[in-house]
Length: 152
Image (tube, rainbow, N blue to C red; front, side):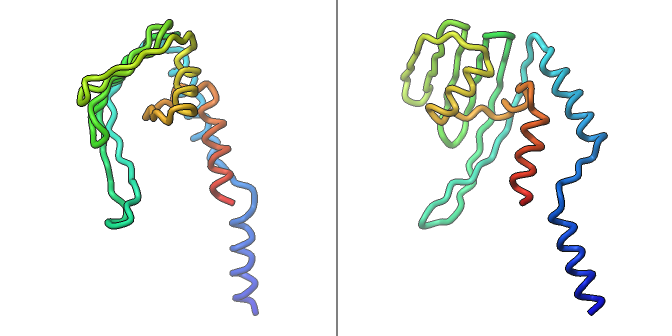
């Protein structure tokens, strides 16, 4: 009986409200503030993602590229991978995408901040921007909120 009580107590304590390491949260907040104050930056990225295939199961795909950003409204991204070779340009007045593989481009007039542009393109067209969440002013809050949802 004592063993069942201990197991039950361990199970129930694991379902209690999520506890966060205050030092880790402080470091994330500090990092988010520093990144938010950057006027320009560039970085290289490497991503892997799985796509389900009825015949072969999960297939891992890769992409790599370089991103250049200048606040508040300049952006250039070039990426290569299993989905092709593309570049994205934003100059504060228009957004353009160019496919090197198909030798095609599209351009639309738009005037948004970089974060607003990323949100819009992601939600309307499914364009992925690896690492973009680091540039959101509420990065830590979003991370903790997502963590809460996945732990229940």
